[in-house]
Length: 286
Image (tube, rainbow, N blue to C red; front, side, top):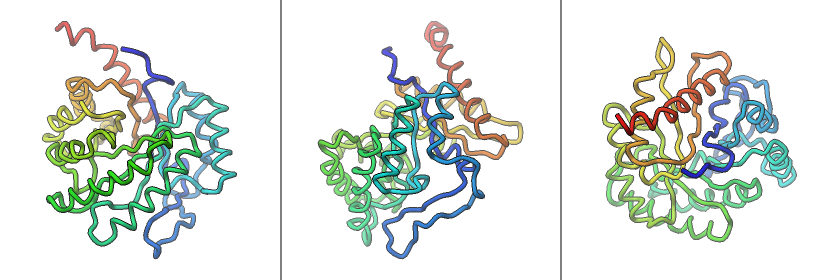
């Protein structure tokens, strides 16, 4: 397999949300404010410091949640892009964390707002933006509405250098049936970010084996219990990725209070996946 530029591991800023502290909840809803909030406290680092922190730990890819970007001004976006370049970090995905293209009342408003993030992603040098397919019930009407708006969004991104992807997430895409229908309808115009943690076991395993063949990137979220990382679940998810032939990067999603230092959880997951990948030849010959 050809080596990926900047390696196979990315980190999402969600994995560092306690360290970053502040959020800026941008929304298409004009009644909501994007003013700074501190749901996890004031934080101990700024977003501008994150690229250097990744480089220090041998990680080469970054994903950024839209609510972690403190300013959308051109000067700040340029400063952050410079920080990425200085640390040789590839900006894999800007994660657009709001909007609902399946909502019959607000879809047109929301998809227009989502489209505004394409230029922001381009300014930051991001390869992709990840958007929500929909939060409504997975019926025929809502799926069709989402597909129509996502096709329009793909047209808006054409020529920008930014690839639009969606995710097996929220109510509209509860299983492979709806996910595959939507991707078929989009005919390659929108890619897939497969998330290992959004669906519920045990059905999620075969579901992942089904959809990860279509994934370009992967949110490799691990579950934790009182004893630590749920190794059996994580391994099973990775086996389903392998079964599907997934060969893309893994974005390390750490979302647990088990470790006081979020980097401990992130790097534990990295080592786990590295060991799993190293054992691949033995599994093929077993």
